[in-house]
Length: 131
Image (cartoon, rainbow, N blue to C red):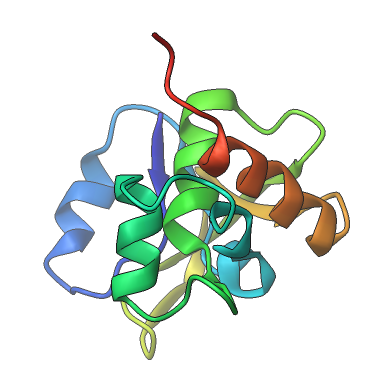
């Protein structure tokens, strides 16, 4: 399984055309999922908190394209995502291959309300490491 947030390089066509298993696209999923504020109560030396703070998004949050893709890759769709089979393959933000459907590819959408997904991911971000 490959989880792909978005690919924007024409050279990626080779990989997409030859990938041997299913491809899940999370293209817009993270656009409305904000994460960051859940890290405020964590220790100041928490490396994830530090990254959000250095990027200037600790208090107001940031879109979560990477986090939603990672969640899907590790945990699967569960109750969070819907997977819609078959979609045109995106080669760039401008050029689409709409001439044929790609049955091994699926687009992922959010099943739960955005704020609930933000809370789920935020809880995981703020969870202390196992000892």
